Length: 210
Image (tube, rainbow, N blue to C red):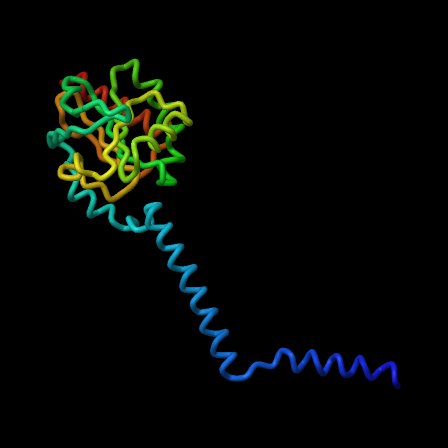
């Protein structure tokens, strides 16, 4: 019996150790609630940076962007080396605009597909201008270099130069413009290599008919 007494006391002691008075219970509940709120807040912040906040705004973006059949508005911004570049510099050539950011998961995942399509379309005369938004030129250049992009990377980190005519809500956004400057297609999602080739070849065909 003597050998059993410590075990009994130990169990009793363990049981009493987990009992909390009402104030301690309230404190633990409040702490758990605060932690949960911080986790949710962090998730929403990160999600917003990654474009979750743009979900469902495709219709709005379509209304704000240049329409198919309209002349694409000109803009002037800089490439990642600081050189001034305007859309009108490429007058007479079919142009594929890609608004993107290296912070955007769909933009990151489509970059190899975009590059693969561009390699086949470039010899046919298409120009691809990839305008990075909401990030530094350095970050855009680093990501493009890492993915061996050979198309032109432009930068408008604060949207000072493009937002007036191209208020982008969806990432990525693709706009295909024929050689006369008329918008032929607007795509508010990432593209596969096959889709990019299809739209690019359609753009070249439309330009050849002008």
